[in-house]
Length: 261
Length: 371
Image (cartoon, rainbow over all chains, first blue to last red; front, side, top):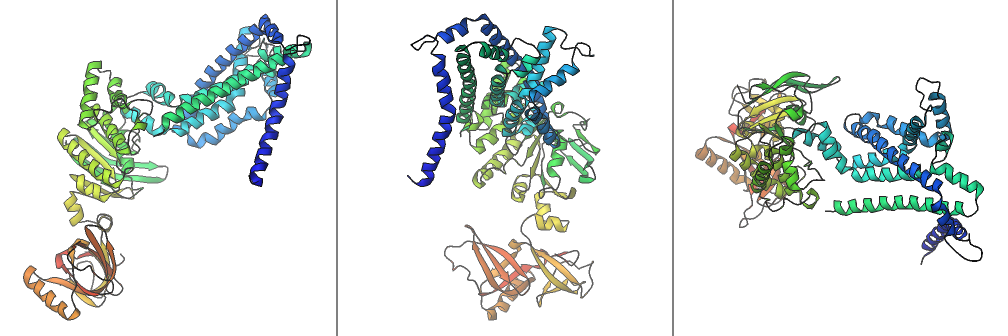
């Protein structure tokens, strides 16, 4: 084995240890709830907690709504940029990257000033309208991931020619979008959706400052008051995220096999 | 009135004019090719007929109906794209059926039509495959079937064969032409390949820099080019620089050797520089010694009327299979000419002195001095 290979292996091992050791430590700690032996008691307690079910269910619902709203905004935008307004691409890319640059706390304070109960659009006046605001704020947060995933998918197919071919055969815009374009960027949309889900499910800042019963604030609350349950919750959150990443890979690989000549 | 009538159509992008005053009448069932180099406006014109571009001026009529401002999905015009443009998520059969489903045809009618189209393109067994499972030639046939399935009034083909390899290109162009003839469908075919245009078309529209240079049958375009561009773009053309000696008699001197054109030269005076054009197939090569050259020339004069002759040296010999392309240099000028490969004859040798003969009527004196 030459020196370069040894160096690469050492880098990989150090990197892996850096990520894996804390996870193993957290997992191991989450099993120590029963004194003197390993058990899944912490997980049992977490799953039995009605607040866990409520907050996890709430965040899942918010994530799904975020995906729906995000897809409805991002897919037509990306399609139109690709088809008719390619010159606007840099501007749209800049806008979609803004949530990565501006901290979530700044965005949410902006929302609170803009949509408070005495504003002309008082979205924080009721719980349901605040939920709506939370969904929109999650859409903003997920924009960099969702837009990039969808845009990459759009670039992989010849959107312009497929649109023209469909139009030439008599199709109108709804048919073109739903029967020709969407099925061909399905994998990209799913990738974006999983990334959105993983981002939203554990989000803390926006949910907390908008005072919504989401999974992120629940994680924080448990972490401040309990010993073993936060570790169990951290492992659960990691598993959810990994499941999303795994699904992206599975779906992506399926597409690659299909695309092979 | 013509079936497809394109009248004074122009297309501008800002200050840039890409198509100017395009006028064309296409009869029902006619096969017309738009031929020209990249950027000459041929595809833009085709896209205006399809409805993907809106003309800046002028009108387009199909069967008497003005379609200039109609959306592409309201024109009933079939189009085959260079990149096939098959829908990757649909099978071959679904691709062919797409336009029929949009038109809300009954299911049994759609199935019958798809079967019919797949038989026509000789792929009846591949209806269940996806586009990525087909070769380029098969994909383009499916694209053709899809465009024809909706029974369009006009079929538009935008360089449909340019992504295919040479052998498939030749066989597919024959198939397209025979299919077009059997269906009697009015067809516009865009290509930059002169061989394709010459072999397939009833008429050719030669375009350059957004203008129509000439419209004519392949025979007219090749043998009687109206402009210098058409003469140089269509076919291989030898351009020779010379000097006018006697305009009335059509006499010109090229590299010190006198040749005669069949027509009198009206646009140039004696002593003025000129450029003459000669097709490779119009010239004949004689591999004889210098002293015999004069005899050959005189014998040709007796056999087939007066012919020009020029003495030169073989500069290059390119073996192209059935044809051998030979480049003969005089002094400043050189010409390329093609001879059939004869396995029993001695191949021409570089550096040997030869006589090139050609008819007076084959010499085309171009306007202006520069070639």
